[in-house]
Image 1 (spheres, rainbow over the protein chains, first blue to last red):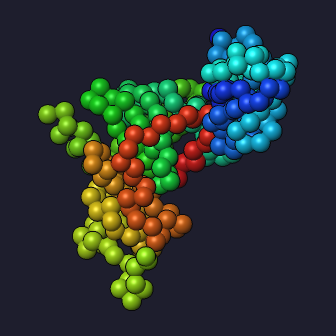
Image 2: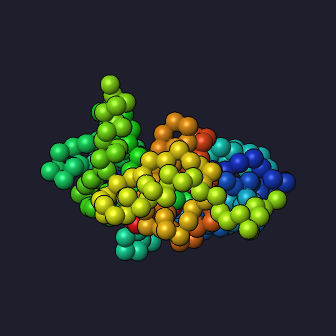
Image 3: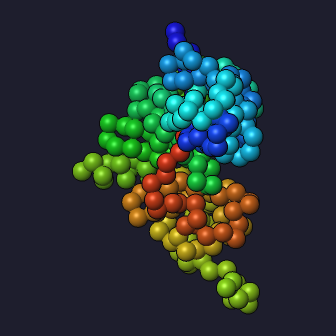
Length: 170
Length: 92
């Protein structure tokens, strides 16, 4: 089974003539992009060792001039999922949650977790169901079971959401 | 310019009633509200509100550090774009 790779950044345009590049880091702490070991391209074939110089600027090992740096523009950088440190109790990587199957308490399939959003008011699971999307707060009451290894979450949507969903479908 | 202290925080009256009913029922529910302008009060802590953003109700779990902010701050009206990357979510 191929290892899961997580997008952590993207190389931007060259900076100067010594091979430096602009770096867009998607990690929660922008500097930590280089702390997960060598980064790879999307296919996982090429590896890149990156040194972050300042926020938004980086040096790629083996790239010493502007022309070589320009060839990397737009390159998306990935890291193996296994390289990330294990999360704390009751904490989950968003990348692990996305794609999990959503089931009800009886084990019947309800849909799939399409996205996890957080706007400052707690994490929200966006579950794609056959009747449209459902936004569920990521709480123990609404999502009592999260089984990343098993590939599913058990959800108990509040009654108000189910009523709204039925109204939308009509 | 900040709001005058003597006026107290602004809250739409119906929110207080809804929150009270929800807390008394003890059910796992989302309180649907349209009042983005209302201030989050200490008695809302622990409840989950569905704050309307013009299209859908965004779930907002009220925590202590949200007191004093407005509900609308936690329910963006524009499309959110971002990468999950190494970000984590804590189950509340």
